Image (cartoon, rainbow, N blue to C red; front, side, top):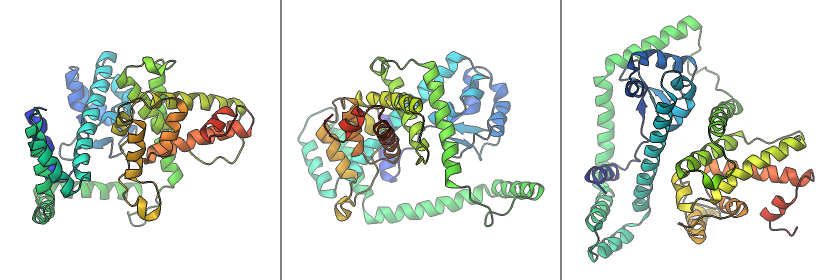
Length: 375
């Protein structure tokens, strides 16, 4: 671990924060391809296409005219970016963004590991580390000490006070900008007759899900067009991770309760696609899956007799953290015990599909294998 990484980890341990995913300035992306002059036009097209979601694609308010995107945002804006930069530059950009995203996930997982331990467990680990002579001894020792210091009551109080003061200072420094933005919003509302926030109609939940589905489904289809998925094991690891991430996202947000009988061919095609994604999950290790889809931080499972964070970790350790998960059904059974919202909705879509195949007598083997019934 280099010195900069160590400083970064200590900083986020001390501030009790998650390391944010890397964001890329659209102007900087075009600058790398020597077309920075088109930066303003590119940002305007992204805004006109209504791709700004304030999560993966957002406006840089302190740098007017600039838009920032993360790895998912780059895929979301793929068509527009490709119209300004070359195919090779776009592929390099996408691969670099996903690698950086993966590095941040690994770092956050390391921070979560320290945060999950009790103070007694951390002190016990500290004693064990002091008795070793490994190269990472001093790094681990420093991180544990930093975690113990960050849990002190006086430090927590200091962080809350600092957060409040930083917020006030930020507002005062940028008061003119906030005032200008507020004035622009009021002018737009007056011109277009937009109702105030208190009276605004909240979009229906199914409309929000539909928008998400369109974004991830489009990104997933573009990925399938660019890559051959006939044999998932032959895909490079980074491509396989992208395939799994986009597939789970696309089918997860798509899940809805169907009231009409779907067509037989539609069910067969759907199972073929879901089966490939499930098989690709089986080629990964639980440790890799946890990096892409972190386990939900729910800790009250024992109290309410429900699956929680510890239940999932136990299931992952039982399967072997660094061993491939296995077959399609072994992956499906592991996902049954996996606490993550995206995973849960994807599994619902998969279960709904194999149940349709069983009900409409297309193929009952997946259903019986999943539920442990004899064929």
